[in-house]
Length: 613
Ligand code: ADP
Ligand code: MG
Image 1 (tube, rainbow, N blue to C red):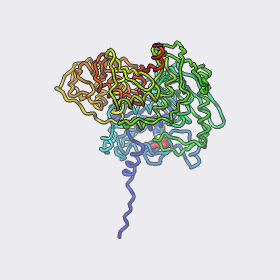
Image 2: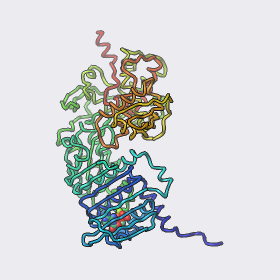
Image 3: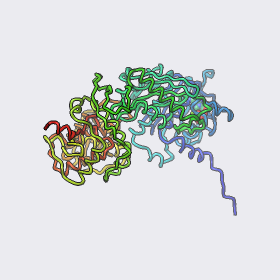
Image 4: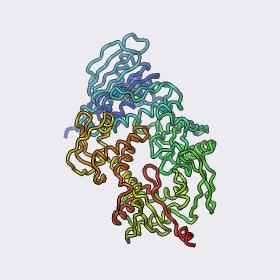
């Protein structure tokens, strides 16, 4: 029998490697910008067209390449950054595997122009699918410019796998921000379809954070600094009142490289425990420095997880550093959790005046003793422990969100009550509607009152977030196509987020001019007219604060939950009320609306009895 093993041609090997290095346009941006940083550029310009599908251009003013180097750069394992295995342990540059350019050239059309300062002429190389089509001398400015066109043109499967332009561009922004946050001394410019997205002048880290995330963050940053033999930590953490709803501004860097670390994230969150508004996470920008030999250097170029020799010690140091920084700023309250009676904690209200609500706790409460309700929604059991914890610590927070007055009258919902309500709801029909606005229902400890509109917002919000993150297409209620005319800005916005809206059940297409056609609407929208719901949606969407682009989905879900929720004057029958209560307590966070407003309150039986004394 003949031998059957063959060596793959380089072009095929490169395409396979490309699958690992280049997952999406953002990977190309990351690799090329990192190369520019490694080349000691002081100014880097990034031009993106169609979220990188059509063009990714990176222009730097770094050291440039000689004719030979320019040609060699595209070979696999061609790198100027390590010479031998020992070098691996002292890596200070971003790249070192020499894979990126070979990979990119295998799956796109690439044009490179580069010139070193001591050469009069530069060189231009054109490569298509790993094949050098042309190399010639050209005059060009010092530094390097890469144009990557038609990404994945020869890998249709990968091209199809790309998400909407909004999603892909969000990935680019994320990678861009990570590099910009570690290189404040470099000027960055980012353009998308010729419009300017970021213009970041050379500065220090603090100002770089401000130029990326907006002026408001400036007075909300607390400096952090801790220097130990194992690890050095510098950077900033956000004040608790600046904490945001879920993710976005949490950054760890190790030796100036972005890293993901759920483990260290816990150390930070833990240090903030008890001082954050419900459902929020603090911002942080933490720069860790460790001896490279104590971390796993053999990291894959696209991986952001990193192994440390001394994980646990670093956890402790980090936790202590954050706590200390918060303490120095008089933010962390000193709470004695072993105290058996009620205690007082300062709570930071949004209006910035500090109130001191009285809080009752149940000393016998044990989150691990709870039985889970028999409830159909699989989410509720999966999240049970998490929800228990949230409910438990949230109970310390009555008085937040300007609800002090109401809440000092009522004690806060406990887990037991939540479960009791669900059990009740399965058994009987004890629901009453009050002023067509509140749902009242008896629970073990008293009378539970639910704001129906806020409850519905919460239910829809979590549902929409789910659909958006799974990117599944929701079923649509078909309707006679409706044409709606919008102004230019609203029209552009709707078209931009059209894919996300599809996941939520809208079927919208561009009608040209400033008009759209609505062919389908989310089922939850009830019998509202398309104009009405789009109008409410746009209103809410545009009035909410513009954060990072990565929070766009949450913003969409929030705005639509508000637009679709039932009104505060809708009559509900007892079946509808029961369903609403059931769905509410299947939510991850049934206590607050997506806008941070209180949903549930309980009048305790003994309070009621006191009134009749
Ligand atoms: P790596 O960065 O891992 O070395 P790459 O494939 O990304 O591998 O790049 C290969 C080589 O090409 C680099 O080591 C560097 O010498 C050269 N190079 C790439 N981009 C630039 C640039 N913008 N300016 C100067 N040299 C560059
Ligand atoms: Mg590289």
